[in-house]
Amino acid sequence: MEWEIVAQDDNNLRFEASARTPLYRFVDDVVVVVTPEGNASRVDIRSVSRIGRGDRGVNANRIREFMKAFQG
Image 1 (cartoon, rainbow, N blue to C red):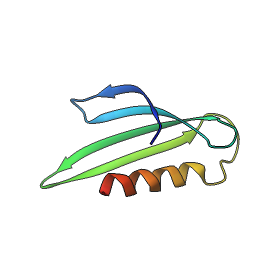
Image 2 (image 1 turned 90 degrees about the vertical axis):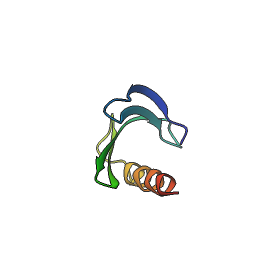
Image 3 (image 1 turned 90 degrees about the horizontal axis):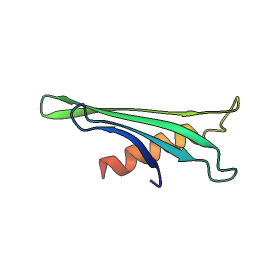
Image 4 (image 1 turned 180 degrees about the horizontal axis):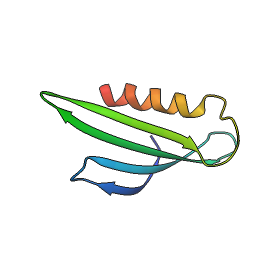
């Protein structure tokens, strides 16, 4: 995903990363948490821009791409 992992908590199945936008290379923050639920897991992900009012769908697309890759 070309993200820079900035924090990782293996015990809580959580990591934080920095992602850069393709065009202007703005830095966005990403947090992923995996929660076991019986025989499955729930994946919560947040991606937010550090600056600016709108992201033109970049964060939503990042989440969709991650979920697609995660599901294999």
